[in-house]
Image (cartoon, rainbow, N blue to C red):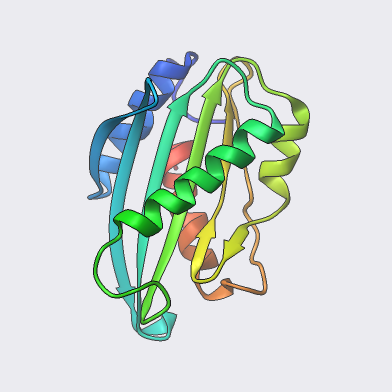
Length: 169
């Protein structure tokens, strides 16, 4: 469940996420991805405890008519590529990591998509994604909140930011 009572439509939920991202110091903007308005938030954090690496964290969110496993899986791949392509600076893996929250919001959600989002973090070399599926009709946010073996050092950061951005906590 998410905190804001007025956030019952996909568009209202995206406005809520934009506020949460801005309040956390993320640079935000709206882009057009093949005719779909997409909210993009970005920040970079450096921690010695992360083996002296900088994590570039992208949040890319859109409202769609329906979320199924193929839809969220494809969107996750698109967001991962976008994050790696637009990060800038040193190549990924050289004291640089990329993290992303691909977020799809709809009032029509396939339960299998909820399960897919909650089951694990998706990982490719130095790029971690935690897909988020938001059911605006039921006011439910699905995302992985665990600590995987690969990328474990960043897990608390992902859990904290996910709670803040998508649950308002």
